[in-house]
Length: 112
Image (cartoon, rainbow, N blue to C red; front, side):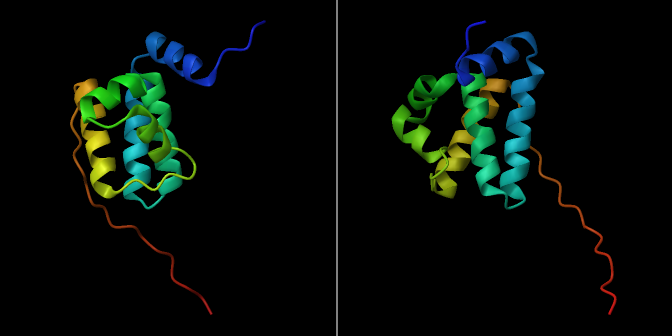
């Protein structure tokens, strides 16, 4: 059985199950908003690979595909402006919009 590159495998899953890519994008945004920056970047990268690809994202954002790959890579440090620009274009591609809802977390009392 031949081994398929990771990005090709993601794209194949998204083609069979279109909701897969949308869930990756939603999970990425939730991770970023909850301070899980590394996880959020990794999920955004997975979403790009499963959907439009870095070449098309670069065309839409006016940024080089290699720069976008670095931003969303393990050592990437994208600015908030760049992350929001990326997320906006990816949501538009999905025909989606984000709504943010702030919820209060309950914290167990500290015994001691």
